[in-house]
Image (tube, rainbow, N blue to C red; front, side, top):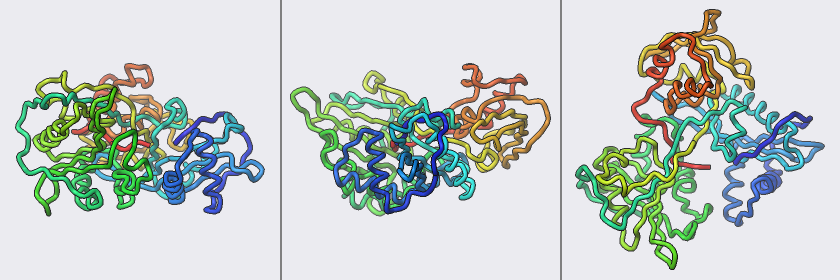
Amino acid sequence: MTTDDDARTTTDIRDIPESELDQAMDLVCLAFHLKLADKTRTYHRDLLQDCARIGAYDGGRLVGVAGAHRLDFSVPGGQLPCAVLDFVSVAPTHRRRGVLASMMDELWRRCADEGRPVSCLWASESGIYGRFGYGAATESLRIEIDSSRPLALRITPDSRPLRLIDPADAPAVLAPRYDATLPQRAGRFVRDEFWWRNGVLDLDGARGGDDRDGFGAVRVVVLGAPGEVPAGYAVYRTRGSGDVRAGTVSVEELEADSAPAAAALWSYLAAIDLTSTVRVPARPADDPLLYLVADRDQVRVTAQEPSLWIRLVDVHAALTARSWAAPVDLVVDLRDTALPVNAGRFRLTAGPEGATWHPTDEAPDLSLDVRELASCYLGGTPLRHFVHAGLATEHTPGAVRRLDAALATEWLPFIAESD
């Protein structure tokens, strides 16, 4: 949850105590025009309680809120501690007075103290966070399948059995398959039991339960025999047909260890009785589904949009923690107005054995802002796109091509969750 704010004012920035959690939630609801049911409000209050909570106070009155979830997320070659920004709200009486900037300054300080070199967020207003160094690092597709006829495929689906399982049992069954994806796709969060139960499956109904937008209870289908790590799974809901709508399957998450496994799951979802549409709100931009279908007219991409935004709070720690696909050695002139400690000229020497990032006085091969570096960091956006857009400058011919090759990943970064 995020809103806007600009020029500076004097506020007291400090922790929000538990005794003021309801006051903080009132401000969040005010900023986002929310009217939450009791169960949903309790769910979000519990999330905020578990966050690092930054408050902005004017004369003792809470006028700004920022929460940061302390999570780990996947980067190429490993995982990093991350501060996931949430609940960011400023009272309408204090917008454009520097409240957000003051809270962000405090977030940077806490990230440094806790050794969290990266911050992430989902931006409610994408125009706000670029000035704080956040860049869109993952893209997601919205997909719609015409399931009024059998899904035509170019490959043979995996023949192992499909079985529906009790959603209450799903966290233990699905977690090993999901965890196996962490080294393959960057930008994914390490999940605990609470996240599975509430964030993914909504078992307690705090996010809408059995009647979210008219869709029924969550269903979970897995591919493979009981007792084995599933070859794949899908989490979905269904909605019956009405006077002006077709029966619809909404796919909230689908993971598979191979194309045939994915084909088996998509075939199942497209063949559910009394439905004629499968809607998928978030899939990776390189989803094999787009290639394994025999008729692309049957599978439409209805939108492509930025998903997870990241900020390199400690550029040195972030660059030296990830893996590199190819050797590269060049000098980068990096701009960072929000965190000047990151700014300057640095020599990046990286390859399959690791990376170094050291200050230098040498002439730069590239010049760019930390925002563009963040967008490239997970391998989701080639730097050449920013050069073509005039947002980065190549001083040495071939430097951009070499850096893109070093940053490349086999699979594009992707996260299914949304704020």
